[in-house]
Length: 157
Ligand SMILES: CC(C)(COP(=O)(O)OP(=O)(O)OC[C@H]1O[C@@H](n2cnc3c(N)ncnc32)[C@H](O)[C@@H]1OP(=O)(O)O)[C@@H](O)C(=O)NCCC(=O)NCCS
Image (cartoon, rainbow, N blue to C red; front, side):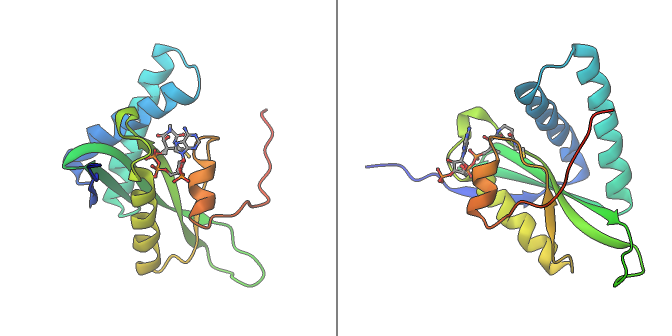
């Protein structure tokens, strides 16, 4: 009989920040080549962001488990957008970042469970829009959950 894998998601506490940082590093190692030195400075910058933003209550992390074993993570960061003619005040929106599933646990619905939790958290806390930057690997996952493309453009200077 096929064993069903039980996926659970919990909110990360400050004690879990090393896990979030490790997953962020693994994500970067997997997606693009960087030197060891670049990864090291990226690690400390990301740790600082986690600490600073969570102190300001602008970042929440989620950890996912498969049958009780740590399998992946992701975060919601509350960022500011510019005013526009309709909304004059700065508006805060929710941004999903650092979605990572450990290779051994992929295709078990781990990332899906985290994104759904992040969507629920954002909606319940008054943020009606969740933005993200999708990697090629993540694109299918987000489309399946209803995310659509926006009009962002970019130039490297
Ligand atoms: C993208 C990633 C987070 C998906 O994690 P996961 O836990 O395996 O995802 P799920 O099991 O919830 O799968 C969700 C969907 O994504 C698809 N998917 C998963 N891995 C994929 C891959 N390597 N390539 C293309 N699609 C993939 C699955 O097919 C699934 O769709 P399906 O149910 O129709 O088959 C994981 O592959 C990962 O950590 N990749 C490296 C880092 C990365 O790209 N993160 C996303 C940053 S935006």
